[in-house]
Amino acid sequence: MGGRILVGSCSWADKTLIDSGWYPPAAAKSPEERLRHYTEHFPIVEVDSAYYAIPAVRNAELWVERTPDEFTFDVKAYALFTGHGAAVQAFPKDVKEALPGELQQKRNVYMKDLPPEVGDEMWRRFNEALLPLDSAGKLGTVLFQYPPWFGPRGDNREAILEAKERLGQYRMAVEFRHAAWMAEPRDQELTLRFLTDNSIPYVCVDEPQGFKSSVPPVTAVTHPSVALLRMHGRNSDTWASRSKTAAERFDYLYSEDELREWVPRIQGLAEDAAEVHVLMNNCHSDYSVRNARQIGEMLGVIEHEPQRAPKPEDASEAGQERLL
Image (tube, rainbow, N blue to C red; front, side):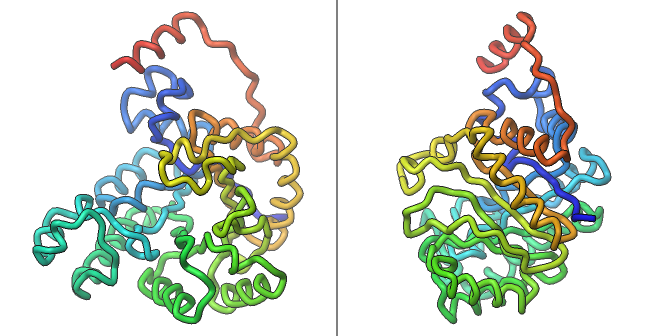
């Protein structure tokens, strides 16, 4: 028998999703109701917001309380830990106040800019925030999405291993955004062997090709417990643009044929991994949840849901909600 396949979205609170009308008017009114509604449709979600700011422990506790026992959260690693710049404004208040004066005035800082004790404290708080999810058996993986300038060098491999050690009891997964990690068969062999030897799940991707950041859609299992697939859409016009918002960058609705070509590949991952997490990151309007349902139905892991035309009063209420 194959492994369990979980299908969901990389966000449940994206503004364009809320504005799309996917949430019924009553559910769109509060974070609690939105999450509860989401869990009625999908068994997994990615916490993308953790990339921008370390979640409060209380938020994680509420996520546990508001979701079914078998629900799974994959959490995106905080920007500082993957070599990205992090907004000083989003630092915990006491940590920000403890920064040297010149760092407090910066918009973004990198881990290398921080005093070692501050970096240690940020790691401690991030790990502390994950504990409620882990204790409840609801933490899947912690996704480390490395930047386009993070290429396959020895020091970068060491950075991955350091992050894995810092993460302690939690399960790390790695996504690359530099093509050289997986560009050629020899590159793929070296990268996948490195991850396998260090018990780190590889994150497979579907994304626009032809850019320095483009990783080919290779499917591979490097840890028997879990395999991941993140589907970013195929909008080549916005993929490398810095001027676009995230919703504009991932403005892509997969066709049924494009999704169907992934079905046997996902099933192949499930032959070698106990779980497969399929997460739609085309988070523009309701595209991610619409495509998640489609591919979940194709895989036979989400029951078919007949399309229902909205009642006139539903459409009216949804319009009123968007105006508030």
